[in-house]
Image 1: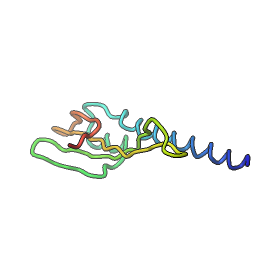
Image 2: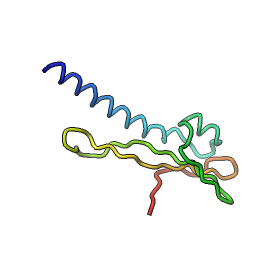
Image 3: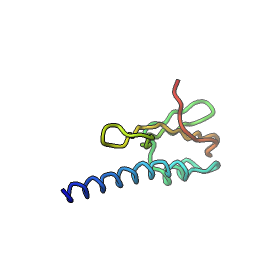
Image 4: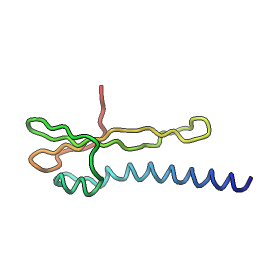
Length: 98
């Protein structure tokens, strides 16, 4: 019984650390960074969309959501973008798809 409780506690802590780490990645980005600096800071993007004036690096990160679903924490995948104009980060944030 004690072993089961210990395993559950460890899994809970690992889950929290994973979602916190994902959110902290986006906080490493600063306006004015180069594309290479962004990739070095938070990794390769899952998608890249290029337009006439801008390039968008798209990332999916896990976010812990308030509340519980059955016995575990609710975690959802959230898309983030990094907009690069003229070779530098102009803006970044949560991607809202409508």
